[in-house]
Length: 283
Image (spheres, rainbow, N blue to C red):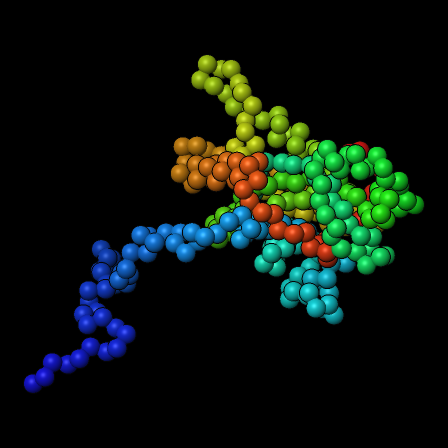
């Protein structure tokens, strides 16, 4: 009698692709070890091939919250976080864990909303400060450049975001306008963190030694109301824990890449949620 041919697409001996655990359950075993191809396919990529996304806060006027808008996201509500690259939304009350890697101050140029709005460029701290001196305050307290665009000082926190499923990804938190005071307070708090040596002396902790919880809360002033950032330092990373060590190294590597200009930041969206403008911030 002729031998029975194996089915197409299945191994001839299926029992060779599974093992039985101590509990008696059968677990499938891959036919190829994927780890030998770790990272394969991206050899030709450069910093222009990827873009680090922003994590922003949805406001009541955000298009993602309006069912009549083409940018609407089902389930999106004010106070939620949004990944501006993937449009993934996260509850603002629960928030997410964040390991800050580094910080920069930039000046972002926008076309005025009454002129159609839109991102018009980003400048480093030195150039931005010089541009501010040439700007004038309008009746809404905005810095208006000679070309008619608005200039916003913006505090950027680069870091590793950890979501509920344990996945870690690089992101940028960009605080401006009403959130500048929050950014300054966070910077001061992080800068005060110290690590004790065995002999009792202390040294400044690196920014990426901290694990934060990022949530949102309603805020208001006489110009309006919105949802703002509420950062809380949960604890210092435990460098005897493998998971924390991995986060520490990822954040440190991200910091090095940012300072060396090796990564590309995603373009700021023209419709990115921006809180109401205050006219009395200290920059």
